[in-house]
Length: 341
Image (tube, rainbow, N blue to C red):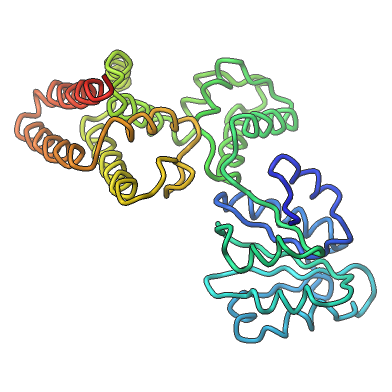
């Protein structure tokens, strides 16, 4: 099996193996998939804007005409130089086209296949992992260390110093999509306006997920039974002027997701966030896993009804909305804590 480990992907992209001309780039992080695909294209041709050097194919085309991929891969460049084929895989199966390509005795053309999240048993992934002349590059949600490197690289390139407390605040606001994370960092650099240093106030002012992050932390603490942490986060939410409606919305959204996951677990799915969808940001995993252990589907259904009643009560008595929201969330946290005990 030829599958590059996640930690070795960047090294492979810097020096692609000529003995493995077919590269499958796939994973949950669409931004990282696109970024690595672009880097491979850049390393494989002299001019990516030259249609004679780089051919772009759609998975829908190859599903209809599998032989097209082999024909393009064997075409000799009209004006010489290196040539590559970039394939955008879609919902249709292109494994037959790739299988014909891998059966060739030799291929001097680099073929880069860009795909979404593929299970280990997916025909395209299984085919490429078995072939000696292909390699697969996984692009999963990045770890805190990966995001830290991304932050440091962007800040160095801009000649800006990021204060330690600002870095600590920025890290959990990123993740899930490499392109989105990079854009947030560059937006922060632009906002700094050449001042040379970025602080906490800059991060709070410009990074788009700051308010969402705070509410996620608040509801995670509630469902995991962390009463003391919940009270502290409620106080911060009040000080920040967070709307009661936003707090209720975040709680109901998370409650619905926990209920969906618990139903799947009780139907036989493993109690592992890696096996459940949608993927969870790494920094939230511990609290969400704790919540999934402390709640079952039936108790979550009851909590849904109780939370809906609290939302209705807050709407009927706006002056008491803050108190009603706090009591509802503390009630959830107490019930989760009793279950854990």
